[in-house]
Image: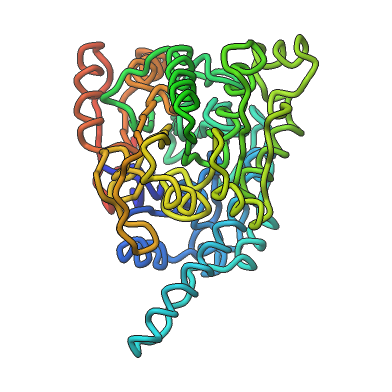
Length: 465
């Protein structure tokens, strides 16, 4: 089997891995690259392989950096199945349509400027209609349900504990008279996170391809992050400010809502208005609320004891209407606004940042990893002046970063994940991580006597076994 690394190789965006096995082509993930705007457009528009030659796709979860270029893959001729869990199929459908809408809006905005310069228009990478077509190709598989995506490969999905429906991909391969197990982690969740069950650990793979996003950072206990988040909210509300949170619409938003529910229900904070201002987050939350069977025991107990849902409470408002969103910026009372996108690159969060960033009473709370060159990264690095909608803003608002809220495994969990693979593991392949994270994690692996590690470059290939 040959693996070629076309995304999330020595970086954390645009996951895309092409497996050539038994004369067939199996694509793991088809993510959207996020970075510098010019580079982003070109990288996402063109595939480094012919989509028509791919026989099957397996998708680990719905986040756009893993699923976001599926509409373009289909648009360029891919007609085969996209294997994934039922929850991922539902979430990906709404996320991809939202992404298509963003592509169209971005193209319209850019073309307005290009027309003024006499430049030809650019096409969106894909449209909302292109995104709608993807749903017809989802082949839904429950956890631990075996299927054969291509000849000689038996696959099943196990819970990755990252977001609703997220999975690690397990491939049992027969090729050239050899039999071996290849385990792809997808994005690895954490133990004791709000809402979801803990990730399933590797079961005797020969080869382990795993993410290393936080390979250089052990995460604190999720309860420590919970308390840190509570303290950020408390001090902001005390000074009469707003807490503005750029958050991924799927996964992080629901965890934050549940945490705030706990804080208010347990009397840890005096209730203030909470607004989830993202049509995508609202639709995703509906899917979460319809599938509480995925929730962990702690959340189930909270629901039973409180006799109310995890993702609904009296001070919470889910906003879809644009006018309602605009009205939030006219209000001066303390509140919490959770809005997409998670890296503050587009969407309604930009309006909330523009309206609140210059007020020292407010706090911008960063609750996840931020890709280089994004507005979220510049805020996390506490730059004094940032550009929003092409205008310069002086940042006077406090910036609080809470890494412990991440839904990605930290260094300690990554080591445990790799160790669980067992003594027969032949090789570890690290993806979805920057070089500092990889270097630190490799040192930890060496200290624990783990298998040799590969850290492939984008465009490179690796032959197994």
